[in-house]
View 1: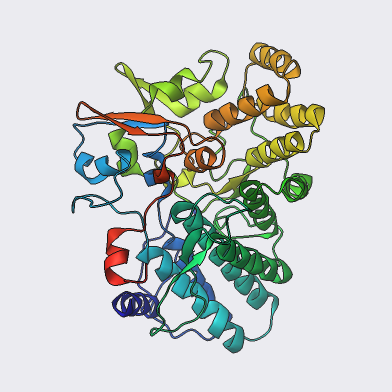
View 2: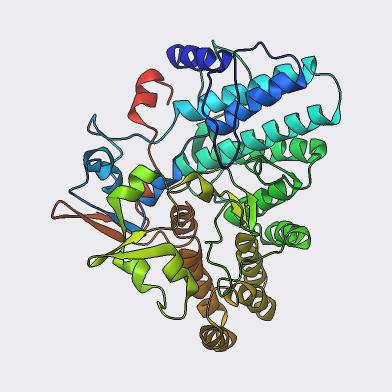
Length: 439
């Protein structure tokens, strides 16, 4: 473990120049020993810019895509699509581990040292708030990759991930429980709430956390925990200040664009270009759409021979972490779980009206209005499949909903993820286990 922390420390102390992101204006520069708010803003910008690009990898495990055996990068990603987490080929790409803890080091430095050295000011509070929020987001992502889905009955004994809150190169990290990780997430979110200044972030720096993004994050966390009252409360607070939806009948830009009126926070590169190039949309995903009435279909996909390529993302302008459509979905699901069927339908139909042609919406509206609770829950999950395709949400929806059976054909062989398969929880990467026997 000491080897890993030394590498992380060296990376964190030497702030390396990175190129300007043309769309999101992430531009740290120089090598500094941080003391001022300006210095710590650079540290924080480095943390944002180095946040792991992992949600495309997760998509390869889902029913959203199939991979091209003839692709140049096929060997790097095939085992992910096979759900082979143990005894990987050395050519296989690993899910991130050290990169998460490297970002964590930056954030711990800001929280532990910046709180002492920065002079009191609104900017100091904002920087600390964002650092707490990003640390919460990091552990939320990690526990949902490497821990079992949240279950209140077992979370205190289910293995989560190690929590590191100090700048201590000698610490030996041991896994915390899923409940302990969620407790830390909520503790950091509370500190972020108390300090946060910005209600929304301006376009161009909307990769940063704000009050609205915090609420959106808390709504998602509550959804994953099955805390329906909190999910409804947080989603309602978001929609009170940011309820905009893109009407796809009148605009030609996908709703996950960083400049979309739906954008709340645009940090994650959810559809990495290298994975986009080796993937095709799965027949199951394509067939889930009404290709004539659903306006998302033409925006998300492009015919390529007998298959469909995903055109929805693959460049930095499509970075997305939270957007308003998700809040309507959370509100609808929470209302349904709280036995408020009519209100759940109303919340969901607000999104549908902006996704289907007028005639298509009339058909959807009539169908939804006739649904009972079971049918509506299935429809919500089906619409999440369509709405958030390749935005990094499908794997986590499958984990918390039904952990369905999935089949992938790779190099002529069929690989199956069985229903409720233990591989719905990703193993710690081999390199992490080699460097830390406590894992």
